[in-house]
Each structure stands twice: as C-alpha cells, then as structure tokens.
Amino acid sequence: MRSEVFKNIKKVHFIGIGGIGMSGIAEYLAKNNYVVSGSDAYKTDITERLKTFGIKIFEGHSSDYLDSDTELVIYSAAVKEDNPEFAKAIELGIPAIKRAKALGEIVNDKFLIAVSGTHGKTTTTSMIAKILVDNNLDPTVFVGGNLSFLDGSSSRIGNGKFAVVEADEYDRSFLTLKADVVIINNIEADHLDIYKDLQDIQNNFAEFCNLGKENCKVIMNGDDENVRAIADKIQKEKIFFGFDDENNFVIDNITYSEKTCSYELNGAKINLSVIGKHNMMNSSAAFIASKDTGLDDNSIAKSLETFGGVKRRFELKFTNGIRVYDDYAHHPTEVRATLDAARSISLGRVITVFQPHLYSRTKDFYKEFSNAFSETDILILDKIYPAREQPIEGVTSDLIFKEFHKNYPKEAYSYNDKSEIFKKLKEIVRDNDIVIFQGAGTITNYCDEYVSIVKNKY
Image 1 (spheres, rainbow, N blue to C red):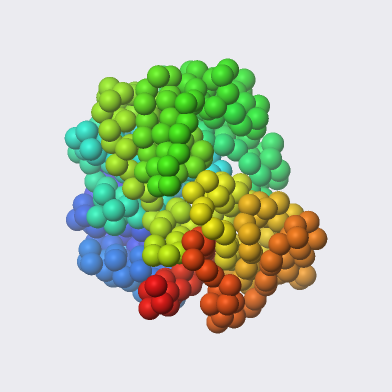
Image 2: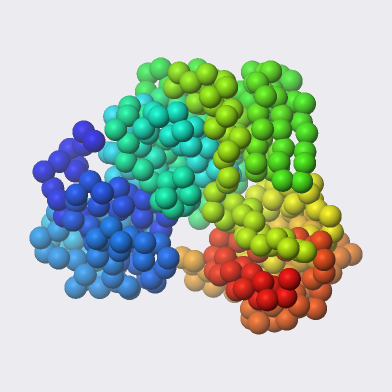
C-alpha cells in the first residue's frame, strides 16, 4: 500500500466501525499491524468479529473513546459534524477522512476492478474475488458482505497486483476510486437524500467512469436504458453485456433446475449454484472483467460454478418440508429479482416477510414496492427499519400495504410486532412453501428466530 495518508502512522480510530464497508477497512488495517479502535451505536456480530483481531470496540459515541494520540480518524458517510468523536478530532487537529477516501488510498495503486450499480454490487464483486482467489492471483478485496471463502470476512489482504472492490454510489463515495476496469450493473433512482434526481445519479456514474485510469475499460449492462443513456458521456472503452442480441456479450441458451441454472455467454458455458436472471447478469459481468486479468474462459467458469452466494443474498437458511431464505433486498428492483428467482424454483407458495428500510425510501417507492410484490402469494409487512433516519409524518408500512391490497387480490398483513408475524406464519405456512425474510435491517434476526422455531416442527 503506497499511501501518503497511511504512511508513518500506526494508530487509527473508526467512527461507525460496525458498517460492512468500514469493518472491512478496519480489519484490513488491523491485519497490517495498525492499532485500531472504533465505535458504533450498537454492538453487532460484525463488531464482535472485529474484536478477535485485537480491535478495541466502543458501544455508542463519546469523546472519551478517542485517544489524544490517535493519528488518523476514519468516519462513515452517516457520521454528522456534531458526533462527539468527530468534534474532538477536529479540536485536536487529528486528520479525519471518510471511508471512501481511505479505500481509495489502499487500492488505487493496484490493477483495480471496481463494481458499481444500484443493485448486484456485492454479488458481482464477490464472484470476481472468488475467481481471482481460486486462480492464485492473490487479490486485495473489499466487498459489502461476509464471504465464506474469505473465512467470513468482507476484506482480504493480497500481495498480488489486483484489487477488486465494491464501488458505492452513496454519498458519491465511488468518486475516490481510479479503476482499471469498471462494471456498471444497472442504474436506478435511489439515495434521493443524496442526489437531486435520476439524471444527477447518471452524471455521477459517468464521472466515476471517466476518473478511471488511462486505459480503463467500462463493462456496462446494455439491457438497462439508464446505463445506455450515459454511454456517450463515458470517454473510455465500453463493453456491453446482457440478454439483448445487440450487446457485445450475449446471454442465451438458459436452463434451470431446482437449485442451479446455466447459460452460455458468447459460447462459453457457465453453470451457477445461485439462481435467477439477475445472477446471470452478475456472473456475466464478473466473467468479462476477469478475462482482463489474463485468465482463460474455462478457469473463470470453473470458479463461478462453485460460487455459493453471499450471506443474506437469497440465502437458504432452512430446508425440510419448507424452505426459508434470508434476503437483503431493500429496493423494489431487488425485491422483484429475488421473487422472480423464488418463483422459478417454487413447488408451493411464496410467502414474503418484508421490513421496509428507511422512511424516505418507503415514501419515494411505496407504489413500486407494491408492484414488486406481485410475484409473492402472501405478503407480511413489518414496521419500517429507520437506520439513520428520523420518522416522516404519515410514512409507515401501511403505505405499501394499502397499495398492494388495492392492486392485488392476495393475502396481505401488516404488523408492528414480530410476535404477531411469527403467529401468522404458524397459521399459514404449509409443506412446500418458500418463506423469505427480506430487508436490510433487523429482519435477518427474525429469520434466525423463525428457523429455530421451525427446526422443532420439521
């Protein structure tokens, strides 16, 4: 790592260390023998894992948590100026940088593959990471999920020349990266608390691509009209992929089984253990990007075949009479993709337990969420998980519930207590049903609790 920011320092403090992106950098620095500490609002499985690397973790935020001899503070995009640790850092003159800046300092001097898009970033990044690891290219990796082939980590220290990272558009974070290969999986309206509108988002994606190194290649979803719309603004070599025949790389000859799918990409046969057309798109982007590392088609395809998925991406948690999945989807397009995949393998009904994420996203997309749930047979809604936001008057899960009830003659329920959700599931679930717990908040804990319940029944 040839970085002026990290040169000649050893003690680093993270504000918001529990986030998946922050934790990856914290773990990376700890493994590189930096003295690392950090705080977050709550202790989680992630913060408990960080302790095993000698990282000192504080629950909550206090100026007392920041030692005066700290040499660098790294803070998440969600941290405000009135955070007591941030304020103390400014008062003491301790350099403070955002997570995105820290990530760029670590990876920009490598051959960087940066994966962007509204959806699919984590899975695509993970696929590329596995391909490079399997083929002994020893990559540096930063990804927004915990990966089994990285021993449950979301980062990896590599001594090779390659780095693969998830390039997050939130807070324009990806503009700190200077890539050799950029992937744009898709572009949709999201994070409208940061961006003015869809055009603003598109302009920032184009800027991100143009910030790439001189010979940067941009691998673009040619089926996405919002991606196609910025192609002329990108002054780099462009490669299009997708299902449409007009793309440079075309997905065809698709087959499904209960747990797998396969397709051909310009004649290369690709078998996957993760299902759904969205995963065909993700793996196609990973395949094309990996070719730029010098690997041959067979080596790439062999690695993809054994890719087992990412934690909380349509993750099968229980199967015996019924199947229970944990899924991170929290945008209408992600919801629809998961439900389409579930429908393709369903032998019974699809029951979705959804926890909306953010008041602002619910307000902006409640109609789109309603339509996205058209593929579910039964919908159960939990109360909104607020994350970083304060409540917005009149915005509750009932916005989605009423819109869904109006448009689809299907069973739907809305609850404010998880015990009511479990009670309803006990009443309605029957053999061959698929139950999906979906959302970016605490719904994953509901899934684990439900699995514990059904293990005693089946």
